[in-house]
Image (tube, rainbow, N blue to C red; front, side, top):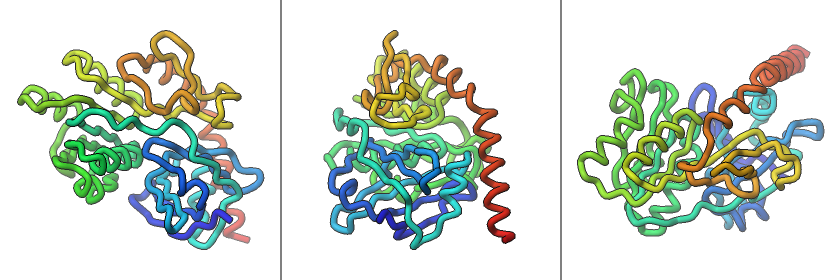
Length: 280
């Protein structure tokens, strides 16, 4: 059950796995997520669904190796099985607006791409802007090109696509008169914050995908709470998509920073344990 049928390395720290999970594959829609565990003692990790194939009964997720859970996940190979794979969870993305701009930053592109694909399949005009620090970190470039009417690749150092930030390209399109009914921004919190500040200035509706720390995925633990329009919301059941102009990004960033030291410690523990298993 939950066998890893395929595994793909996208860059040195980002991988994609395809998992046999027919129940999830039959119901999955763009914007929804799953929660998996590698083993009985593993942590519950949420991942947005990158793609689903109901005929094959498979679901693909893309993850960055940043903590203990993803380090253990990375150690699994094609043919291995996961202990849990629950989903789909969360609300599907709303496919609204005829002319949309999809913005992805870093590993957030793993979430932005299925959203772009869903809009394109619905017959919408899709412009995609994706940004990375450098060319070595670029993922899903061909996939975005296949699902976009216009595609712009940005990098901080200019080693891939155009040099600059995604916000600079977005403002260039706005000032050039491109019709934009809606912007969907998915990536680091700081990126989404500045995208929303820009679109608010031009009065362009903007949706962001929020992916805070999450445990049960049903709204019971409260771990994924956010402040939206001055009220408490839960990313797992109220989202993960929210009106970006109403999200308190500063509160979300402060909350995420509280766990950095703990995550670093658990990552080091996982690495040491896996190294011992390899030596044995």
